[in-house]
Length: 112
Image 1 (cartoon, rainbow, N blue to C red):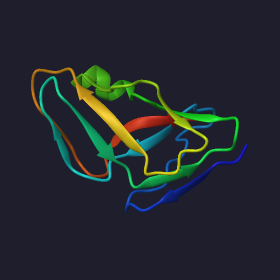
Image 2 (cartoon, rainbow, N blue to C red):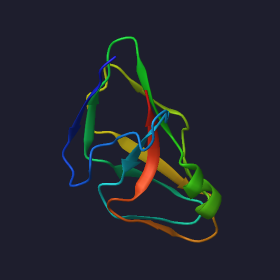
Image 3 (cartoon, one colour):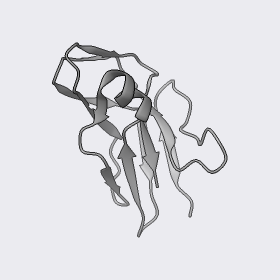
Image 4 (cartoon, one colour):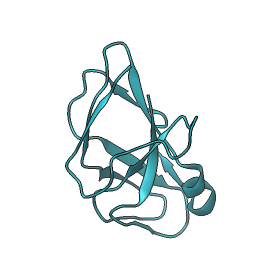
C-alpha cells in the first residue's frame, strides 16, 4: 500500500518516528488558542491520497491528553480514500485553562 502526502506547510512531512510505530505525527500549520472546555478545527497544510479500500484515522496524542487534557474530538476521525481537501484536526480542550497550539506543534497521529 502506498499513500501520497502533499505538504503545503513549512512543517516536515509526517513520518514514523520509530520502526514499528502505527501512527505518524501530524503538526499544526497555524497558531490557535483553544479555550477551556472548547474545541477548534486546526489546519495542517497536508493533503493525502489514500488507496481505494483503505482509510486514514486521525487519533489523539497520549502526551497532550495526559498533560493538558487535549484530545481529537472525533477520535478516531476517519479520512476516506476519496477525500482530497486539506487535512484538519478537531481538538477539544477538556482542561480548565486555555491551551495554545503553536504552528509546528505535534497535535495528532495519522494511522492508515
